[in-house]
Image 1 (cartoon, helix red, strand yellow):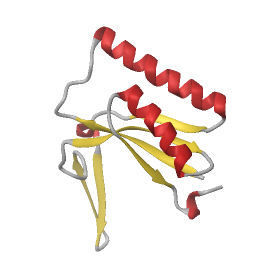
Image 2 (tube, one colour):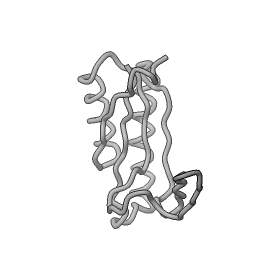
Image 3 (cartoon, rainbow, N blue to C red):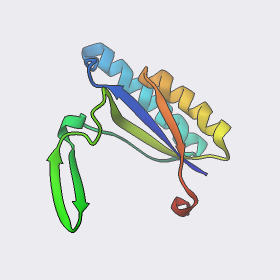
Length: 117
């Protein structure tokens, strides 16, 4: 089953810099390599800040586009992994490793049956 492991960033807290940033990238890459080696890796990516987003809405046949995030909240989606594992317990074990690497919360959500191969 596929799961989304979503990195939740508090955008009011500055990102690490210098050696701290390099260490963070190293921890994340170590988890990425472990996922690849275990055969659970599907896809992953980091996202720019929510300020760079555009929200597109279609209502009554009219399209509007607005700058900024869809929701006004201090925590935003900062990145994600998509993994394929046997069950929720396996996904939670990977989420624990991801949370330790990112030093932040990871939301775990299963894909619905329409999204499966």
